[in-house]
Length: 239
Image 1 (cartoon, helix red, strand yellow):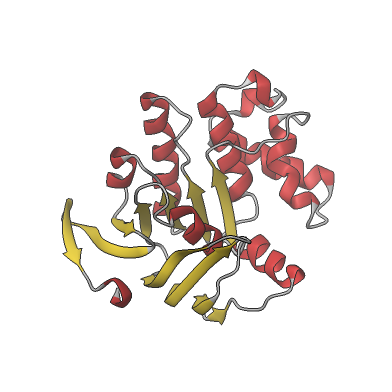
Image 2 (spheres, helix red, strand yellow):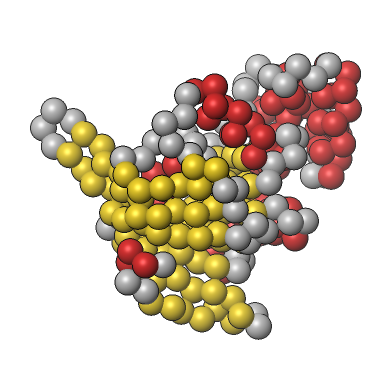
């Protein structure tokens, strides 16, 4: 599903260059449940942005479902994002002047799906999230957990094969975190490849594989085997 080979990424200003990713090599199979951890500045969000085709990389290779993601036009990048990937963000990124139903249905608007059909599909997803009664409420009327479930429903409406979640529980209390992780775990059990960037150990422990980044390289990973996480240390460029 996802293959990274010797991926490098730097950011440049007039004064300095910042080498953020330093030769990341990584394979993620279809249906895996993966989290990415690391200190601030370790490259977590940069890696997720590249996986989501929201950012480019300098050198190396990124294959998504066998296709090289390199030198894409914005139209091509948007096509792969719309067809393959659903995004969930810490800040929810809901549109404040649209209700929950309209927020969930929005991606189908850009696919030229009729209003009636997209609203039917959005309502079905909200119902699955336990939010049918909140469909016509504005984001300001929803709790943090409700907003995140609306955001997950929006990510799911295009039937993505991959969910990319950037600190999806960062703005939530501990109980709501558990509820949101239950939703993401359920989606993964349906076969959706799920990748979560997080700094919370409890969130990472819910996944089956944890990639630990340090200074732009993979330091080690842990995998859940028979319910227990075992640690594997690799040469950073050879994972």
